[in-house]
Length: 291
Ligand SMILES: [Zn+2]
Image (cartoon, rainbow, N blue to C red; front, side, top):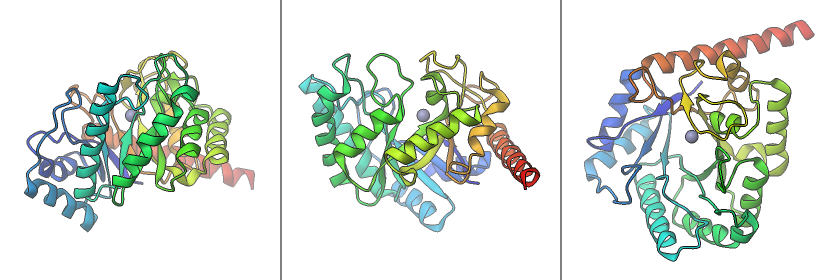
């Protein structure tokens, strides 16, 4: 399996491979600027080159850049749209420079106007972004479903993917977001339905990676609070999700608080690997019994 995590790029992106080694991660997700400000970070050429080299040698098995949360491609405020466009373009430039596999993006919020009203604009902005991407995929992440956030379910995400119609527009599914938006992904039948819906609407090959997070809040609560693997409301049932045949081989990236609150640590990576292994062996044993 490819077990990864959100890794801090404090002090420079060149620090990422060392931080991954320290916790035993194979893959990384990075912010390329502070996630809570518009101000872009200027990266040193040697940092970009170091991370690119680590990705190209395979030392980093999978690498994505997560765009900042302020971006709203569905806004009706021209100034906010302009800033969103610039921030996304900046993220894409860095993703190109470090040979990332993808850019993970939350589309934004339609603020009650409905997806249909904003779809032409969202589609235009995504096409523009895809033109700038030189290799990596653009991955839309499912939302936790609060307010007017776009992408609460595969239907909304599929509507966007259909409108844009580009082979490099894909999906990143976050287990916590799916859970709080009302899909019990610890239930095999419900998970099968979600996978079948993604496959039927956009093709499962567009699903490129998973954000693996347990949830502090109940299924359907729309409250986006990540918990450590196995320590939240999903608990041991999260292994159902990790071992699904359509999902088990995808790169898995933790965005959990970790044990000191500073993000995924070695214990979390170990817990992810153990849970994945447990789920896969249980599934194999069930298949053997069924034969
Ligand atoms: Zn996520």
